[in-house]
Image (cartoon, rainbow, N blue to C red; front, side, top):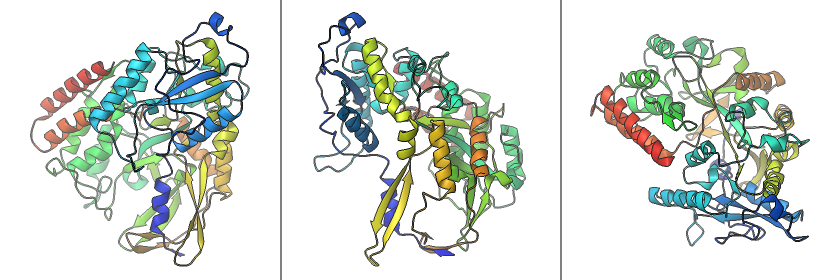
Length: 500
């Protein structure tokens, strides 16, 4: 079967993850202390006039995204005595409504304002990584005990508790037995390669990684490159969170693992500190893989010389998820998104009201209904209407919702009507048509359950740049390995201590 894709369909799918719209009228942005936003004791709360709403304010760096706005509207419309308001600290649109990014100075100023409000005012009740210009700040506030342990609310909740949610993910997100926030979705970040090249063991050491590379056929690549900078980006930089401990406010770039992998990158030719081009025609030993959907149970491989595509089942063993190489062979790590935390220094009444709001994101119904988004696109040439599905990144933490979604994939309920695909303007020939089965989904679930590292994907980009500057200087010959490691460790340690 030959296929041909319509470019604007793919482009439209890319913009569904965030919104630059205005905050809905039912949840107005307020720069003033909202009614009910004062920090009251339980005794003071009992004097609240009958019928008076509990107003909760959530801090957002910019306007909320579509799903959040919809949830706020629906929750406020329930007339349950609780209202959610948004305090926005910045705007990602210009006067004409066009989206734009933030400068480093703007992000720093936003983080300063949010931090000051959390430390010195009573304006904010709900916080998440989305509250900050750099989400690492959220992890640091967890360390300082600024949030409520959510387990106390889950004890008496029949629908959102340790039995209905993925217990493995909850345990990985704990801090000394306490759960300060819950991801709505999670995924695995790993390396994958053909088993004939990387073996069939899921995790490997750095020495095993290097040994496998030395036996690769001539002309092989690491994720499509033999450029030192590219390999650093794709293998070592992708694993940077492994060397950052926000819980203890420590960095470990002087770890032997970081050093050995950096030295491995330096065995390849440098592109003078710049990222080089990729060549996907050669045999790639590994590439970075995000296991963020049951569709990952089927592996597609493209032959770029003739644009033929074939598929294989991951569980059949032709490919292996080998994880990132480390001395202890710990392999892949899990990441999550969607966290919302409740401030600890507000009244118990407001804490319970806050739970009533955030729990709605974790129910079976909400996570099932808000996983896949169906879109229709008219073809201006033929008049035909195409159907395309876009998905939330990651697996829902609600167990029943996750099972529902697996079944929907198996039953092809998310199948669109676009069947023609082109890549780089070339028609792609699909050599086989493999359909997802329950055993493929079970394989993915078992793989997720085997990963015991939780890494925070919200690593501050300022920290990335500190590491990157010194690494690229080393790879381009500007400094030796000892100097590079020392500079990275010292600068990163100072930066993290300043954030704390």
